[in-house]
Image (tube, rainbow, N blue to C red; front, side, top):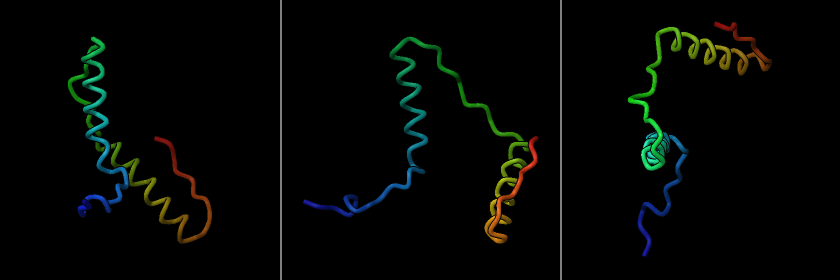
Length: 71
């Protein structure tokens, strides 16, 4: 028996929540301390991520490597 689900291809985007669940369960089974929540991203993190995305677009348009300033 085949279903539509047999033909789905995962790009991996759906794996992050399951990976986190696995890590929490693993740590509980092993008796390790479990962090309450991952650290939330800051505005500065978002600005840095956008700088990387902008560099990717420039590099693609120019066909060359682009430098991203640190910090």
